[in-house]
Length: 254
Image 1: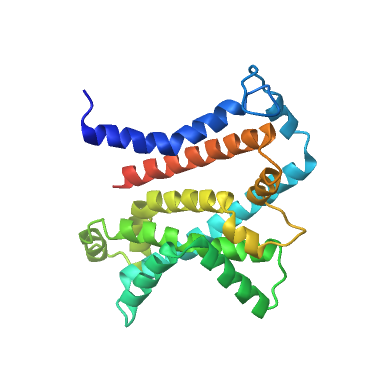
Image 2: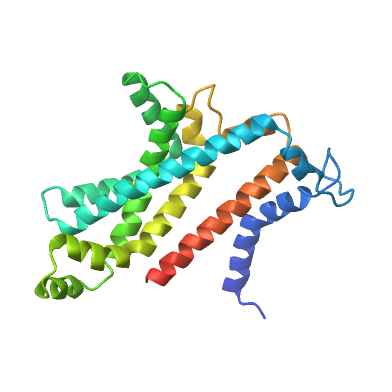
């Protein structure tokens, strides 16, 4: 017998994942129009390979996601180390700003970056998109790495210094290996956030540089086609694998 709490939990998860399950199922539906099941087919996935504009959007999204995740990981990792290793005036305020950035709605972030890029005369396209994605991924990396740094024994660093290790030697041989799983998890999380972003990308990209989420958004405005179901299924699968990998790394780091 299910308890009330278990039943409530199943209902919540069903509400979250049942629409995704329907989307995945209908990406294999032979019917091009409507929601009637007419048989199993892989045609819609094969059609995706012949769409050149869609290929360009995928390449653009992967390029921005890879670069944004890498830049955010580098900057966020050094930022987390600086916040953890140094005591200075305003440190708590900076930590609070990271949390505020995490909680800021995407539309506020998008409009703010739009105004900033206009004021700085930055042309909308690849560079504006890369800067925007790096910006909203940065707090996630910093918080993830900072949490890992707070979790390991500080006595290890003191022992290393007593044995003659310098600051950089202790950093390279002690701190970096311990926080490596958190760095990898932060990179994977940033990659997923960048790859899936719609709202911020809508405000900061240009007409000559289209990314996959905006391409999907433009396709569904005229109705949900089977090709959209196929794209969304692939994107969901990639995101699920990356998030699972990041959670596994975080669990191993703990």
